[in-house]
Image (tube, rainbow, N blue to C red; front, side, top):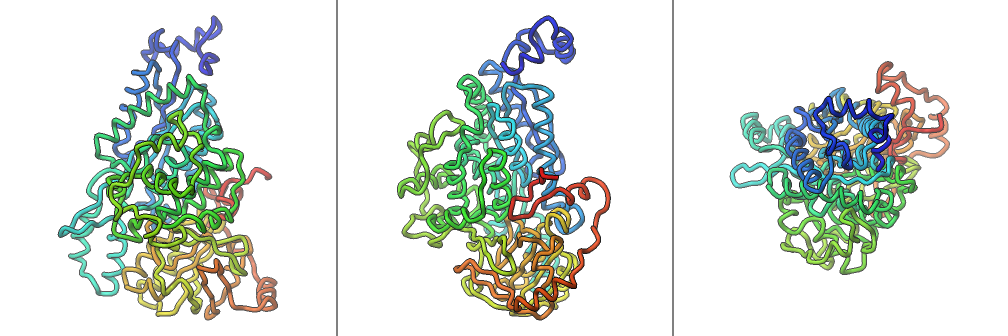
Amino acid sequence: MRSDIMKKGVEKAPHRSLFKSMGFTDEEIARPMVGIANSANEIIPGHIHLDRIAEAVKAGVRMAGGTPIEFNTIGVCDGIAMNHEGMKYSLCSRELIADSVEIMARAHPFDALVAIPNCDKVVPGMLMALLRLDIPALVVSGGPMLAGRLAHKAIDLITVFEGVGAVKSEKMTEEQLTEIEDCACPGCGSCAGMFTANSMNCLTEALGLGLPGNGTIPAVAAARYRLAKKAGMQIMELIAANITPRQIATQEAFENAIAIDMALGCSTNTVLHVPAIAKEARIDLNLDLFNQVSARIPHLCSLSPAGPHRLEDLDAAGGVQAVLARLDEADLIHPSALSVTGKTVGENLQGAHVRDPQVIRTLGDAYHDEGGIAILFGNLAPEGAVVKQSAVAPEMAVNEGTARVFDSEEAAVEAIMNQQIRKGDVVVVRYEGPKGGPGMREMLTPTSAIAGMGLDKEVALITDGRFSGGTKGAAIGHISPEAADGGAIGLVEEGDRIAIDIPAKRLTLKVSDDELEKRRQSWQPPEPRIKEGYAYRYSKLVSSGAKGAVLREDI
């Protein structure tokens, strides 16, 4: 066993003594040791219950003859960190989470790992670590939050964000907003729509590194705790069979995950995280693959913020396995890919079926012929930009507007809230990329304000920052190269015309090459906004959004 190097032999008597100081018996020390990476804390609603999930995992490990040993990681609540300096530290926490799990598993050579994430950057961070370490491992997440209820209507966190814009435009009273605020988030779990956390948990299941049900079983359901116990038992099977994450996360597995991404209409943040995870699996995924998969995978589920359904509805309809089964019927996935069940994806699908065709549509009745995400290219984004096309109003799919330029999220929000943005404007928010932000902040506040004011069918927003999975409308992010790296978005001037053509996958600044070169000659990089600490070090090492905002290794 891998753990033998810290516990077996005469020379390891001091090590065993330290284990015994914590109450471990000789029998426990002799068994396979399973590290339980738990991201529980008291600041993230999706993580407030993870101690109970961990206890269930540990029970499963013990039932199967192993010794579970729990340790913790950090985690950031993107909702609470939104629209202030805290959001600069969200994306960059992903690298710290990956590194911390790696450090714990190399310093203490566990025989296997069970990762317990739930929310936005914790899921990809843990997946990156598991693939980097490549020892038997699996993920069991905390599960989604139930939808809130108000007057028999399902609501969620995005309802609150959009309510702020509605109040500012006098379409709603503050009293009405308070009523929504009190009801939108009824308890623990990752926010109820197909936002980033739930997107990544569903993709983890499709990738094969989470058990069936991992992406959709509600946080409060007893089935979630049964799943956690099964995860604890299954990790012992993976040890016995020596099945490791890189055997599972192959090119075909990533294509399955992207297929689910497209069918469900997942968060644009998946375009950051999937390439970063693939890199740890030693697979190079370029952005073109997202368009290639999107071209053949129809958009089958309309989940909040784009549609009426939540994760609890998707779970009741059959979950990720039912969507995979529907795609498999048309030969749109790779059923031979391996999973942490020890079986192939196709074998896992035996018995999976769609229980509600209103939630999971047939291919012939898809919401859109193409998948939920599109990658745009053009002189404004030569390395690419991303849009959740399933959440864009049809009238905004091909659009041209007037640039309104802001060098920070705060400046853009002020203009939007003061009703200075008009029909036909394209709001440009720059110097918010991985390097320039630093940290590539989410723009949920400005996009929600635009939607809440009823302008999401008339106003576009483009940025070198990123968006929440809860964003809807013509919101185009991850523009690469970013402004701080000399990208064309840094050369846009007030009043320029910007053309958006989502079907053609084009994003064009309608300024001549000669004029852009003239502007480039006079452009000067701005002073760093943060000049100390982790965010400053991150800004010096981070790659572009087009490369997953991973830390560069060539410095």
